[in-house]
Length: 105
Image 1 (spheres, rainbow, N blue to C red):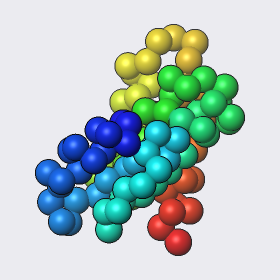
Image 2 (cartoon, rainbow, N blue to C red):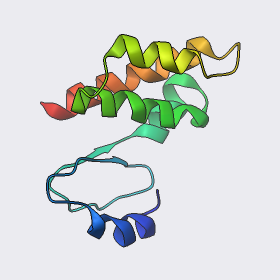
Image 3 (cartoon, rainbow, N blue to C red):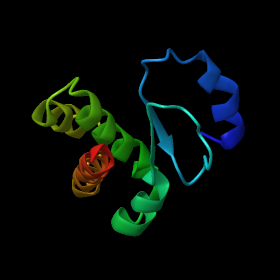
Image 4 (tube, one colour):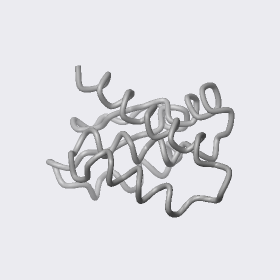
């Protein structure tokens, strides 16, 4: 999401909503329940491919909300990704969990 998109759509969020923001693209969020996480940066630096930034976000969402267990999310993810990308996606999921844990402190 770009800064422009955040500014346009964030006003539609309920006051108790949780927002996961990619700090690579959005520099100012000004929302009390926003978690500005370096999703794209960590995907590039730690996994070597930007495409898994969305998987990092999934891990962060799961950690912050508890809406799904880690085991269920990993199982579901691994059943839907292209063969040969399992390790990169598992790593991305772990990064998301870690970023969210750090952000909650």
